[in-house]
Length: 80
Length: 80
Image (cartoon, each protein chain N blue to C red):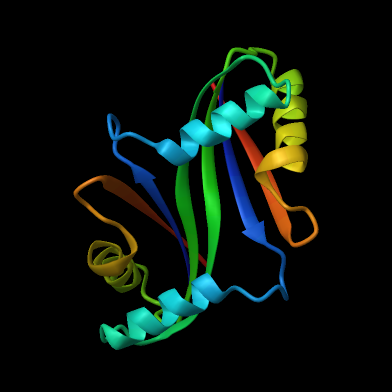
């Protein structure tokens, strides 16, 4: 079973990486870009085949390692 | 209009960051994780309201800045 995890900064948390991308896009001549926010995308291949157990395990991984829940939100999508 | 961009390493390209996450998960006692691949997730707020034009612009941004197309694939999803 495959898990797709998105880790994004909470609204209001400053995103210097996104700001840098935004400025770089402007320098390259791209106009009309209002805001850029950058997050992480993680794909995990799991042995677990039960969706409920897989989700619980991946959410624990997010809380313990993948995301900093003080400043970041995460979402988990399961596939197959 | 909002664009959601995923940038992922092409299959076969070594992913040291993913490997590090995989080892860290094992050290924390998480078992049954076969493979971890880490990519980038970028959200862009665009002034453009025409989906075709927005997609074209964002794909150009990916090729010119957001992704290294030698080793990375990208996907663009548009919203609202």
